[in-house]
Image (cartoon, rainbow, N blue to C red):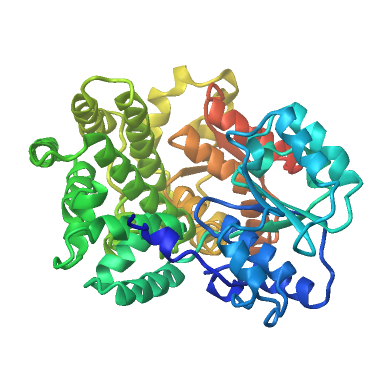
Amino acid sequence: MHKVLYRKWRPKTFEDIVGQNHITSTLKNEIIHKKISHAYMFTGSRGTGKTSCAKIFAKAVNCISPQNGSPCLVCRICVDIENAKILDISEIDAASNNGVENIRSIREESGYVASVVKYKVYIIDEFHMLSSGAFNALLKTLEEPVENVIFILATTEFHKIPKTIVSRCQILNFNKISVPDLISKLKFISTQENFEVTDEALELISKLSDGSLRDSLSLLEQCSVEKNEKIDIKKVNLISGLSDFSLVERLSMSIINKNTIESLEILDNIYKNSKNITKLCEELLGYFREIYRFQAINKTNDSNIYNNENIIKISKSLELTQTLEYFDILKNCYIQMNKSNSPKHELELAIIKICTICTENNIIPKKTVNTQQSQNNIINTENNKNNKNNKNNKNNKNNELNTEHIVNNKNNDLNSWPEVIKKLDEISKSASTILENSNKFIKNNTIFIEASTSFDAGILTKNSKKISEILSKITNKNYTIKILENLNNNLLDDFIKDAQKSGLKTEII
């Protein structure tokens, strides 16, 4: 029978484990110095080497002549364990053996001396799927371990394990495997299997696998079904169900530019090519996620499958609040698509909503503001007109903010706002951008900042202490910062609570 790649290339020694040097070095040192624990818990996402590492450890602790902590693979013990001929090494799937009786039988068996090897080893995979009664049945054995018995408990959902179990185990956390490590391993296996694969295809497979070597090998094998066919990006896209990246980027740009007709035409073309529309929406979500991620931390994601140069370019043309608004619309669309009989119609509605409704709600392209303009130009005629129109909708507390209280003093310290914004930019780029584009008013020693949205108000509230500190250093005066915004918004309420917990004195009106 054909042996699939992830089984054929399963690691046999600690040196074969990919991307988990912190784990393998710990286990090898314990074996070398004979400081072996009675219970280990291997945690981490799928395909990172937990079960493979457990099997290697079972061989290494019983190997007749271990090599620097790793099994020799040639002694009779290593050979028999590899061929599953030694009953003292047991691998149990907790997904199908999760009852109390299953654990009781293990507890009874563990009381007997090993017949062939030095250590009895019980590897329990998917450990989190045991029932509460099974956890309790195993607890006594872990609390009072039997000599020369080792438990290795592997789980992908560490949070589901009772703390009483966790406290009795040595915890080893397996990381997701990095893209460079995956590419290196896939390239080696491709060479050994005589696959013709482009570097771009290997990189894409590595990124799509989300840190799982098993997933990457499965995708590589699907792409290599036709032995004489070269594996390139086009082939990987076809097998994985992804749309062409250029089309996804074109669709994203059309949506951002509010070109409804072009956006729907691109969607129709993708649909006519029999692409999965739900998958397309997932890709759009990923694309906008990368945009707001860059806007938030000003750093690209190396694991991103899209063109980072385009991500940077688009990020500079949008506000963070815009990107989050688009993302929320697409996220709600994705949720509805999984319930709908017509996913394409759901995505069409989401695109139309972004291109039309968002425009009506004044979510417009990012404007360029001259930071050198004077305070008098910031408080201009148009702003005063808007304040007057909104006066009736504001809380009565806002009545104190009328034109007679607005200070227009050329010698005022607040002419230093560009310097404040520049300093704030070093701490939070999103906060500095919002502050730069917000209207500012002053009454006595109180500065009122008028945020256009509740999200903007939340960002400013969270950073108001820093704004006050920066302003104090520049002007040598203490100012009270007040953010103008309606409190009837859950998101803003959360920011206010966070601000209060941090001990901020800022008042929101």
